[in-house]
Length: 312
Image (cartoon, rainbow, N blue to C red; front, side):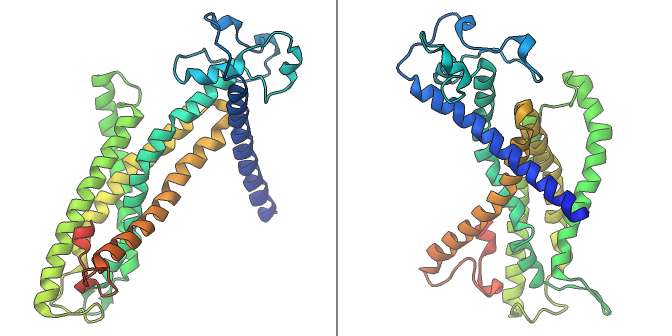
């Protein structure tokens, strides 16, 4: 039964995504077909379903942005049958919904930097940890990958503080129900990720100096090497950044997409993380290839002979 429920939910998500993409394509195709026509000066002359015939959802007014798409709602004389063909004629509301989705593209592209920074927490940060002194005591040794859990602790710390203390104060100052608008929240997260990379570079530079002095390799860490606890600040900042950027992106994409395309909004949010991991891998390959030409790659197999600080 649980497997069937999971399958049904997955099917509905994919169906919703495909339906949303189909609606967008219909607007684009209809607009291209009527590219030689001129839009009427009166928006009331464009096609819209009467409110009495609309089952659910909301009407959207015509806006001046991306005016080329408005041609998809032009009613051609002598083509009454077009009303039954969504690939030739769509409503003004459908056109505006498509504009909303297209306007999300610049935000999505910019947000990919968030995904790239998040990817470091489970890749190169773990590689850093593995080359450090993992012993807390003589009898206890921390697994390198478990350091990623500290970012979750950072999120658990900052979210209640933000929701219960910061938001009420900002709400009184700005008059915004959320305290600050969503894009500002995402921007704060991005600024924290910049600080994260700076801190990570400083810690790695310090670790490299100690590793060079002690002549240690990645497999020979001892009590003289740098403690893995030095990674706690960057993992905490990663958690703080996630609470602003990741949560903000989820709210933004879900809030900005039309009512009929909620699944598309969640898909855009999740794709930021997935594409960010892909770009991170691609960036590592490029940096390794370029710096490796000089005989000393920044991201080599031996982290002590690499320069992750420069990469950060």
